[in-house]
Length: 272
Image (cartoon, rainbow, N blue to C red; front, side, top):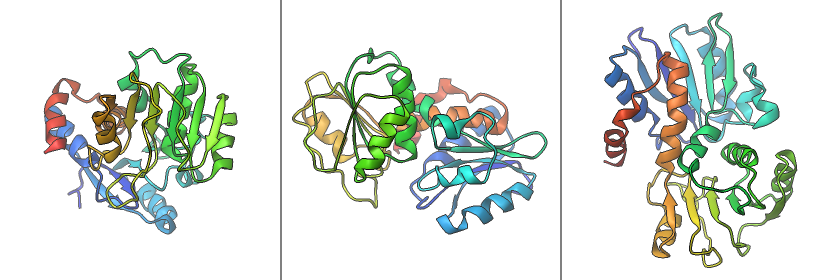
C-alpha cells in the first residue's frame, strides 16, 4: 500500500472525516521527504490486532489516534513520558530506534497554541466533554492556573473526578444545564461533528468578551461557532488545534519539523 515507503497514519472509528492525511502529505511534499501518510479505520475490537500488526511493520513510523481510541491505546504501548499519570490519554504512537512502540500526547500543546497569548490566568472556563481530548485540554488549563472550570458531560461523576485529578476548582454539570459566565468555552466533545449529535447549548450567559473554541473541525463552522459569531464573540475553530498537534507528531514520525511558513496555504487547502 505504501510501495515500501516509510509511512504513518491516523486511526479512529469513524475515520473518513480526518484531515490529518492532507496536513502530513502537504508537509512531506514541501520538504521533499519520500514517505506516506494515510488513514486507517480501526474499530475498538480491532485495536489490539492493529497495534500488533504495525509493531512488526518496520516501515510504519507511527500513528495519530483519534476517537474512540485515546484511552484504550494506552494498554498496548509503553509510556516513557508518564502520559497515563499526567494527561491520561494518548493521541500519538511512534516507534523507538529499537523497535518498541511508545505513546505520547500532542493534543495539549496543540490546544494551547492558539490561546497562548490570551491572559487566562484566574479566568473561568467551561469545557464540554470528558474524553481523551477533554483530558488534554484540562491538563493544559491546569498548567496556566485558570479560575474555576465547569465541565459539562453526560457522566457527571466522571467529570467531577477529572476536576480532582487535574487539581482544578469548579463543578460538573449535565448536558442541558445553563452555562455559567466564563471567559473561555471549549467544546472538547464529538458533539457537533458530522455524523454525530448536535451540541445544544445556549450561549446567552457568556460575557461579551468570551471566546468560544470548538475542537471539532468537520464541519469547520460548527453550529456552536455560528451561534458564537452571531453574538459577536471571538471564535477559534478546530483547524488551529489540528495543525498544532499535527506539527509535533510530524517531527516525531519523520524526524524533521514541518514547514510552518506555509500554514496559510495549508489552511486554504483544508478549507477547500
